[in-house]
Length: 579
Ligand code: C2O
Image 1 (cartoon, helix red, strand yellow):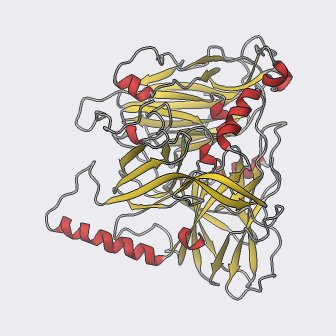
Image 2 (image 1 turned 180 degrees about the vertical axis):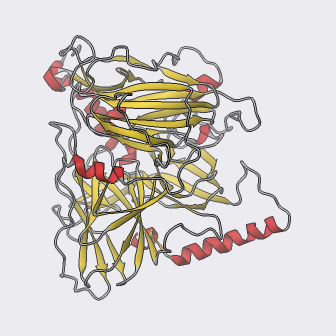
């Protein structure tokens, strides 16, 4: 697995050779035209049930092609990617290409019941998309039930041939996938947590490239390791594929220089640690400039919510210099303590887009204010003991603008496209029904009524709308850092702060804001993002903490077709799964 995940110059060379043919063709007069790519990368994904040994147990997990973590998708900017997914498990399956902007290919986005019905047992669906002007590190993951707990992998998109990285060429590159592992059936786990009305149990272990490392019972030899040559610089492609927890990452005695976030270059920013919420990716450079030894790399929890049980044991891996004695382990990697909000802010403050961002909308057409947070619903079950294990004997929920999203039982994109009535409404409010002290109050009869409404409400955007979203954390149940992810777009993160958003005091950066697909909205605070709604389709926006998604912390944007060329969503593919 280590070899599989470690890409060296050799792979890059091989890719270049492949691409050179395409390049020669373009010299000979073949003109690549968007949305057609320069080259096509084809992959075969078999969703399978696979036995693995973890934490002293033999365990069945769902994988792609028997691999955990799953296979890497390699491509170059502007390539066409085709992935044929066959479901050989008894579960429903879909794959989402997290961060791929899916220009005119919403049908291949992957969230179940939003852009497609799940691929049922024994069925096949082929995803096709072009990486239009995208390069860097992203991830793919299952987008149905909690299957993405084991069904995930990296997407590595190299720049076009001949285009260098805007930083020192690394000696080697390594993919580092952060995960969470449960000795449970994840489909059943989601069902039982929802049925209980309460919160989820903590993970049994955190994992680095699938390995918990030596801090857990029975796991001494199940550890990931990178062998490094003294003096060389390494590019680490950090990816958080964890389910319900955000994580710090650090390497003992070594600095990390962030050069890319969510597959967009950033100004180099050097730090001791980083934080990644689920779905976030960071490319960091690390130079092996310390005395020869074996150093620990660690991922530890960032838990900003109050009274939530979580796994406290860190997962460690090794950053081992050539020539180091095997038992010369250094001091532990300095991951911040679990509630170190300042450590998170420091890294966020350092994220600036490299080139400045000429594309950040200076004017806006639509200004939406969206609260995000948790709720406790009144218990209505006849069996409260069993079904109302949330706070104060209630049922846990989550919402945007105090509306908990209910997934329809058909594909929302299909319902929209084929004008099938009755599955969704177009009345998601552009502002909360009521303004109050979001961080310290409750939405209804303050301070006690913590209920939300339910609905499959969408928000419709005309093609080309310049949108600003103010995302405001609420303290209805507990304030918390929420990693909010938007499908189909990246957004410019032009501002953020603590407390309630106040337009008179908020400071916006319209010069070099980071361009991300997932934003960790600060605990008890707000974030402001802008994007241009120029991709027709049905796009999910949700908290990437899976339990919050299950509880309804999401909304759907419908972006209408435009008038011009390449502004219309094509017909659905013939093999689109049926519900
Ligand atoms: Cu990575 Cu809708 O998710």
